[in-house]
Image (cartoon, rainbow, N blue to C red; front, side, top):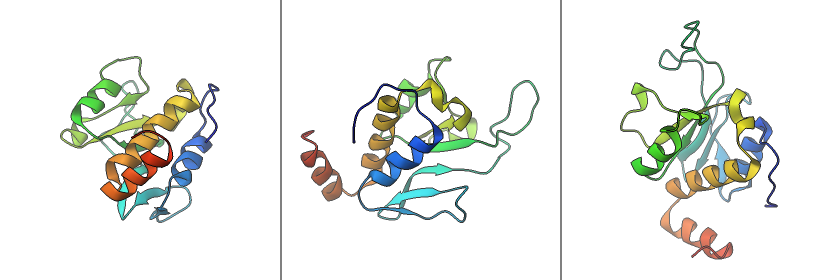
Length: 140
């Protein structure tokens, strides 16, 4: 995938996830895809839930994307900076994922988004698939 510094868009989430090998969409609608590898979700768009609300209005966020991470340390690295577009909620305590509002995806470059989604795929793919992908990209 070509590297670019342009600001990311929601369509990039789909393109990056779909470009990874062995990916299927297990979502129930085209509006809420659930990207999986080997039957394991690594990126999904979720419905509004009570755990993710606008702090001023109390309205549920309707644009939350869940992205897996490989470790709690990786999760903390993404969410501990208050300026980061990534966040978490108490509902996701102990869950190896971060949340991203699609309305804030433009705060990331395509390169940054690509790295996070590729890492999500690697965290959920089988060891064989992950090693094959890493070797093909000279990352072993």
